[in-house]
Every structure is written in C-alpha cells, then in structure tokens.
Image (cartoon, rainbow over all chains, first blue to last red; front, top):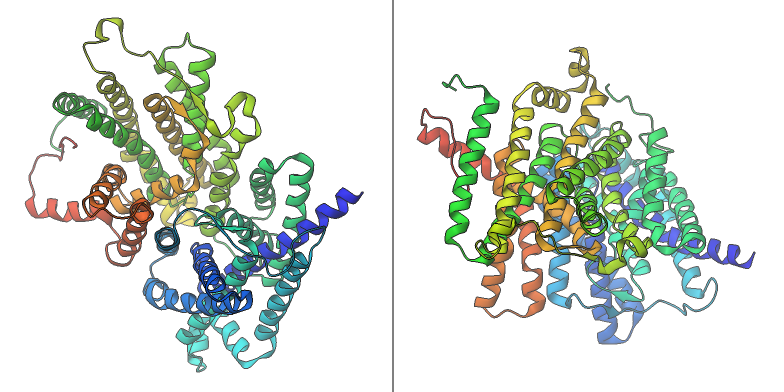
Length: 283
Length: 340
C-alpha cells in the first residue's frame, strides 16, 4: 500500500513536469500548427544558464529567474528568425527546421558546458516521500498552468491570442496584430517550457537530459489532443502516475516502451488524442 | 529513355556497373576508406527506404533507427545462435524482421498525420533500444552483442583484405535492394505513393486504398532499415543499443532532407554527407586543434545549421541543385554515373 502511495506521489511530480512541457508544445501548436521539436533544447539552454548563474552567484532563485526570462527570449527569437519565414512552407518543413534547431542547440550546449554531466541543484530538499521539491514542482506547474489558462480566457491579450490561433485571416481583418501574437505565443510557451526544464533537469544536467522527458511531454500533449491545454495537463498527470507504476512494478527500463504503448493504444482509437477536437479531416 | 530494354534489366545492368566501379574503387583505397565506403552503403539503403516513406508517401518518421536496431540484432542473434546460416540468409532475415516490424508500425501509424505520426515514431526510437536493457540475457544489455562473421570464402582469405571483402558484400546487398526499390518507385507503386501524399481524397476517389498504401510504404522502408541495420552489424561485428539513439533516427531524416526529399538520388548524397560530414569535421577539428567539447559536438551543430538553412533556402536539397545543373548540361543519355 505504501509503495502504491509512494509511486502515485512520485508520478504526480514527474507528471506535472510532463504537463508543463506538454503545455508549452500545445500553446505553440494552437497558434502556429507547428510542433516545436526544439522545445527541449530551448529548455536545456535556459537550464544551463540557470546552472551557470547559480554556480556564479550562489543563488538558486536568481538562476531560476534568469532561466525563465532567457527561455522566453529564446522562444521569441526562434519564432522571428526561423518559424516566421516558414509560415507557408508546409508541415514537414517546420518539423525539420525545429529538429535542426534541436541538434544545433544541443551541440552548442555541449560545446559551451561540455557533454559531461554537471550537478544541478533542486529548489528545495529532495529527500523522502513527496519531498518539498516534489511539492514545489507540482505547485509551480499548477500556478503556471492556471496563469496561462486565465491569460487565455480572461484578458484582452488572451482573446487576441485565441483569435489568432482560431483564424489568423479573420483576426487580422479585425485589427489583431497577428505577427506580434505569434511571437508572444512562442515566448510564452518557451517560458513555460523553461520552467519544465528547471524542474526536470536535476540532479544532473547534460545535453541530452531532456530527450526522454520531451518524449513523455509529447505523449502527454498528444494524449490530451495537441490543441487542448487542459487535456494536456490532465494527460501529463495521468501519464506521470501511469509511468511511475510501470517503473515501480515492472522495471524502469520499460518506461519508454510503456509510453509508446499508451501512445499507440490511444491514437489507434482516437487519432487526434483523447480530448482533441474531432477536426473534419479529409479522407 | 530511348532503349528498348525493360527497366528491370536496365537497372540490373546499372547496378552491375556500379558494383564494378565500387570494386575498382576499393582496390585502390586503404582499408580505412573501404570501411567508410561500406558505411555509405548501408546508410544509403536506410535513407533510400526513408525517402520512399517520407519523400514519396509524405509520412514523417523520426524513428527509422528503430528498424536498423531490429535488423542489427537479428543478424547478431542469428550469427551467435545459428552459426550454420550463411550471412546472406541472416541478412535476408534481417530484412524480413525489419519489414514485419514496419508492418506493425505502419498499421498503427496509417491513421496518423504529421505531428502525431512524428511523435509516435519518435517514441519508437526512444523506446525500442530499451528492450535490449530489459532482456540482458538475450541481448547482453547496454554492452550489446559482439561476434565475428566468417563470410569470406576459404580461397579468398588472405588474398582480399577483410574490410575490402565486407565493403563488396555490403554494396552487393545495397545495390540489389536499390534495384528493387527503384523499380517499385518508378512504377505503379511510386505513382500511388505520391498520389496519396499529394491528396488522399483524390487518391481514394481514383481507387487507391489509402490505408493499405501507407502500410505498404512503411513495410518497404522498414525492410530497407532492417537491411541497413543488418549490414551495419555485419560490418562492425557488434549490435549495441548505444548505436541506435534517437539521434541516429534524426540524422537519417537529416540526410534525406539534405540530399533532397523527392528522389532516390537524394539518398545517395545524404548518405555520403552523413559519413563524410563526420570525417571532415574531425579533420577540421584536428587541424585547428579544437577542444574535444567543441570537436565532438561540431558535426551535430553543423547538421542542425544545414537542416535549418536547407529548409529555409534550398528546399530541394542537393539533388535539386544537381538536377538544375543536369538540365543545364543536358545530355541525351540517361544519367548513369558511378558513385563516389
């Protein structure tokens, strides 16, 4: 019984991280119909910056803030430099460009900070069952997700963001500055992604540390339906707990396979995810 | 084409000519280069398979390394457990294993589009190598399986260096597979694949079974992946999970995009780039005596830059440039050149 509780609580905190990274994918996908495969690399770079700042100043929180700000800026730059020119280039082009960015940023991280793992600190004590650090992860993600949802639902900016995502042409006619909205969307998403990176990275940081986390985040987002933020958060938490059971009861090596199995099973039944809008797909 | 020979015969003759050229090439190069030539060979067939799936049929796969994994372990296990089989049977079975896995993956993937498919195949690339860790008794865990293949006929041992012989076997297999692939791509199947890629509704109105076509594309391309993995295992004498990271799958796709998505020639340029990028950056790093942190990451960084630049500026890849040149030069004879 205690094992069961432990696994559930452990799964909850990792699930929160998948939800946050998944959320960053969903924000971008809603706005630009691009799955940002470079998201783990953006989060990686900001985590490395946090590592350097924390190491230099001794303050975890200064590093934390620097990471979120830097991550947001990175998102903005990526949208302006790479995604904007590809707006009419088709699905495959965007996938490949973001993959290229993933390879590039991971390599740059390796060049600057080396491929060797460095110790990367938790925000709080991480020992014990549902440690303060786990609690912080869950709370931070809840706060961020609520913030994003409220922003989308209740602010003028959120309305414009939604209008842009829903129909850029009409939004433009109504006076929304669509280009700015897309940039804001990427910045916002990358900021949330950086938070996820900071929570997922410890205890060690190295260039490929977020690869597996990214696959689970993508699984969470796909489970939730790529354009449904709330579904993604639920999907992330459920996936985190489910994978924690698999890891604890069957063995940690099976976790990636279990994620694949869940993904295939869900997509076989619902090709647009559990909560995805049943868009009128041709065929 | 002006010849009256059937395309299959023509392609077989071309493959024979390529093989002769390759044998000549390996005769004048050192064992190190022979190994690289063989490496280009198995990457070529892997990327060519991916070209059929992604380029011709429009299904993005970020998990093609998984099929190489299956092919490599098939060969490794067969060599270790059933040493009586000659290597060509092992390779054939690697093709079958890859194809079967592709059939399963294709059946699961046939209903998926763009990012959903990309996500599922990426999960495949991350998840599958974990199998080797899960069953260490059979797959020897993260160390992988090591073995020796005695494929050389007794009469040639000592006469032909081992790597040269291996390069011949690899390219023989690759060229045979390419003949099959080229014939499929140039024929009815190729048209059907492209029709499904361009417009599924129109294709199904024209009587194409869309789902079946997509699964068939997966099957063929995964069989090529299985062969590529099998050849890699044959060449290196090992099969270890560390060689089949998601980065491998991504670099296969990168090679395809770099070479040019729409044609099988693109796969050749991509495979050459995949091998020689590494070689050149190593040389370059040594020349400038760069720190190992920088040198180790240089190929990956260049790959990233190249992918972004190609997508932004040269969507047709290297083959697009070659084709433009070709149109300018314009010879009446069909293009049959040897590869480097």
